[in-house]
Amino acid sequence: MSSAAFREYLFPPGHPRIQDLKGLAPYAYREVAQAEGTFTGGLIRGWRPLYKNDFRGITEDGSLREGIHPLEPAEPGEEAPVADTVTAARELLDTLDTESRERIRYAVDAVEWQTWANPEFIQFDTGLRLELQPPQVRRAALALVRKSLSAQGYEEVRTMMRINGFLGEVVGLENILGEFSYNFALYGTPDETAPWGWQLFGHHCAVNCLVVEGRSAIGPVFLGAEPNRIDAGPHAGPPAFTERITLGRQVMTALTPELRSAATVYERMVDPGMPEDRVHPGDERHLAGAFQDNRVIPFEGVCVRDMPPAARELVAGIVEEFHKLLPAGPRAARMREVRAHLDETWFCWIGGHGPDDVFYYRVQSPVVLAELDHHCGVFLDYDSPEPFHVHTVLRTPHGNDYGRSWVRQWQQGRLQ
Image 1 (cartoon, rainbow, N blue to C red):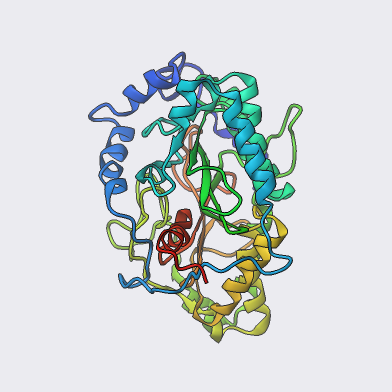
Image 2 (cartoon, one colour):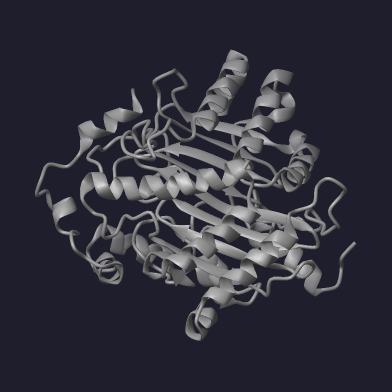
């Protein structure tokens, strides 16, 4: 199905799904979203207690593997652009008044890292809301994002933000779906050696980035889109996530029939064989979304060590595609870590794998977890997953989401 087919699913004029939200300012919508008896209120009640738990990290069996993310100085050629990011962060702080400067900053290991979320409503109002800031503040915040990521990665983040604004225009909800409907926060003090980082989050886009000792890490990362392309206007372009989708299908094609069957844990996106809670009302098939920082997610599907060489490389290609946000040096360091655990990596699939099928997949090892899922309609009217609504999640299991393992090692003076 063409991604432009999303226009077939617009709610009719005056439909309460859209009409009831028109004109609400972001903070007024926040109150409406939390109301008892609403779909969003139910989601918030389920998520709210989870972020307060002491951070441990996602594991496959509940046991945290120590020493799996050693904090080591960056190897030659793998350095992060720390000096540029420090300069950009200080320039951002210089644009702020005293109150905003205080509001945007948190300790490097603050629990507020864990308040990120991907819905359109404000749940935790962490940092500064970009749409309510002067243009120079927005520019400075995005300059820090640009200096921290690869050119391709920065463009992908901006594409998610622009698609959100485009969705708002298409459905007439520019008041809650805007290009800058995102929160931005700083953690720690910008420094070329000590750990610090930043966080950007809002509808369909959440990125957490930490730098320390010449290294940088991203995660958790959530990137999604409904629809998955802008089909008109100055930012019109090709569909997002094409490479991630193509690589997933190519893995399935490269497997033998027996391995393909083993990788397919459920043949349908909503399958009668699923446990009752396998499809979450907000996350659908995702297991590692917002507020799931300590979740136990068992390996499923097929172990990469049992795959033919072509399929193994395609799985590694998926992981690298998810990490294209990183600059070349940190991305090379990350892939070196991922490949060291390739024989402990698992790949699983839900749904069909034909050219028009929707699906879910997950790549998971002790050091990486990457998910892609096709979703049902939220601001468009459809009740089963469609190819133009895509969610992706990237995590670092065993304690290094938010670079937290590195931060703890730094704090304990264990730099190797």
